[in-house]
Length: 358
Image 1 (cartoon, one colour):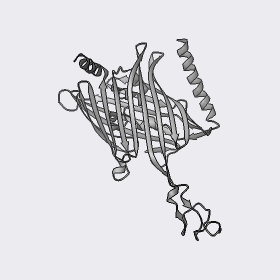
Image 2 (cartoon, rainbow, N blue to C red):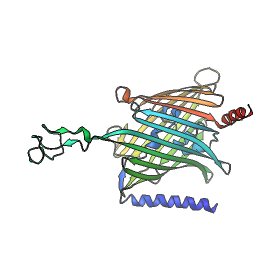
Image 3 (cartoon, rainbow, N blue to C red):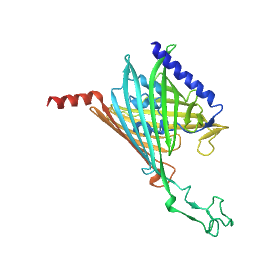
Image 4 (cartoon, rainbow, N blue to C red):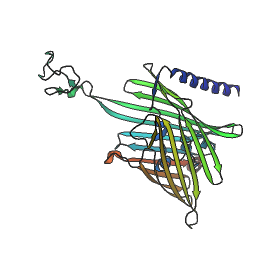
């Protein structure tokens, strides 16, 4: 017990130390999106408006850490392809038990390969195309008339992000609070960064309506680069509501509606739905119809105004979910696809046992 307390104190001390360092570092509005746009297909097809929707999945704790209270004996694997396959992401979620208390763990990877670096291609020799004559345009860093690009100087680099997210429940004065601890490893060409962050989640049921609140990057999340630069990301808040109902007289059919509101101090001027000074507010909607707990149809609209949709099929021991996201970008480049496979651990063990007996 003392060892656990010491570990918690060390983590909190490190977070506080990072928040102090950020006063002398650089505040940015990016860096931790990996834990938001990389998710399972079910969440994505619902516009990620699931802050208050406690469905049983290890990946649901990425949206709200309080959902880690749900015992989930399965493993979830998700692959996501964006921008015509240029950006690929993978997510693996599973659950461990410690002292009979569930802990949700999610491992995330996102990579972008073959990024062209054209910085050394310009032969900046001026309009006469000859080096050292100091004619107009030489050395100005702009492709002027008479200058050319050296294709042999074109090189490629890659970007990789690896994230770890663990979520547990702790009781504070009788109130269950979800604690999400995240670690981010970021590599960009020859540069490397490492950071930690903390999310807090709450949930309250009022009659048939669930209310969820998530405080992200508490008190702040930070990335420390190999150059010594410290990038701090300020906290944000998400508030959501979920309500199930049966609008039509079909046995075993349930409709789940949900809404989300995200607030962040980001100074976004172009893509925020509502801006009040430096505060940006963005809403998300989701709707899921489930028939006999076997077949699901989903639709929504996420906080960046992408229309979303998807299907889910559940069978004995496994579940397959698919999500499709549109974009404001025209053509195939703007379409995103996700597919998730969830396997029951009991089902896997039973199949392994059957094979061994044969």
